[in-house]
Image 1 (tube, helix red, strand yellow):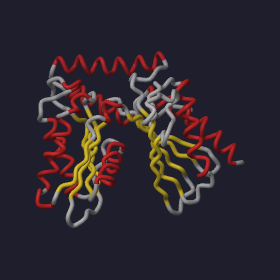
Image 2 (cartoon, one colour):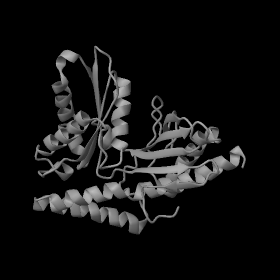
Image 3 (tube, helix red, strand yellow):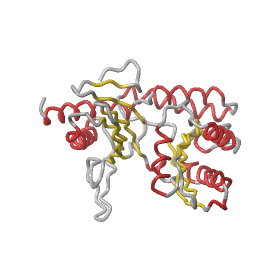
Image 4 (cartoon, one colour):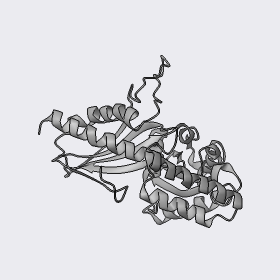
Length: 299
């Protein structure tokens, strides 16, 4: 197989995967959304949830995206150091995004920052966004796709605190972010919290937290407790689906952390709405592939 053949193969598969991801929630998100619906006690909330599921059903029937804001495609990549086609990845993903803009269809959202002109195909300067991790002793390419919509991006925040501010400042920061603009991000939300030493690494960690499979927990007991406490506290706000009175504003709170500088505590928050369009796909060195997000689907 040549590099060109590998690029074309990946572009074709990823176009179909992006189309699928724009129309259908991953299995774990769909299951957790049903749990939220079944646990709600408010009749008004029941009506809102039924509209959510009707929308998801119609997206399947009509072969259309499940949200009109298909965002901007982001790719979080774990590339094996021995994967032979690394040079084909970025051009393949750009090609897939441009083609899926027509075939899915995805709403053209990419606007050049300084000319303020829409590129028309969701590509542009550093777009689609690619975040790379290199994995030693692996020949696989793992890609997490994510549609970053405006409603989920607007509540994003990051701040660096002094250690004297204490960890209570982080909790207040999270509550301020979620109880502010995040009310407009179509709850129930997935709340990603990044804890580190500066704006950059806390921001990346908060997005990685959003992308974790639902039901997973922080590996440290204190991190897991923080996730549970934040979720319980946020859901005690009395806000539900669509920001109306209800029992839960969040499906999950995920925390990702790194070591911090002795003189800083950095925190960041990213949220995802109920249409959490995140999918995982893995390419092998022979360009065969498998995906784990949508059972019973053949691309």
